[in-house]
Image (cartoon, rainbow, N blue to C red; front, side, top):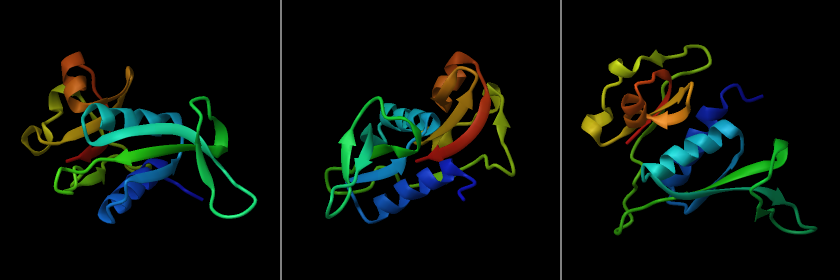
Amino acid sequence: MMTDPIADMLTRIRNASRIERAVVDIPATALKKSIAQVLKDEGFILDYQLGKMAKPAQGQAEFQPDAAAKGSKATLRVFLKYGPEGEKVIRRLERASRPGRRLYRHYAKLEPVLDGLGIAILSTSRGVMSDRQARAQRVGGELLCTVW
């Protein structure tokens, strides 16, 4: 039983980045899709797709893009980004708020991550957004993770 699906997502991305994989498949939820959208908007990943894994009669399961995929079969495919010489764009990916210890921040208390080189991802009343967007919209929320 998985107790923290967001930590699982971040770990899958971190592990795939360490072995320099181009894509990583993650069980999809609406929150994970929103986190992937923020990572894409901020330039940490190339793209993501929602779909499902189809099991053929033989061999490995294949990913089939399907924007309407829902339920336990839905899969989020994240396309990782690397620099021109193969350097990792995501250097660090850390979970901040956990199920046992939630962290909430007022927008005025949101400090730039690594002097603005990184981002914090928050879940707010207006949706999931980066710390920059939260400060601009003057809204606080649960601090999900930091990326740099």
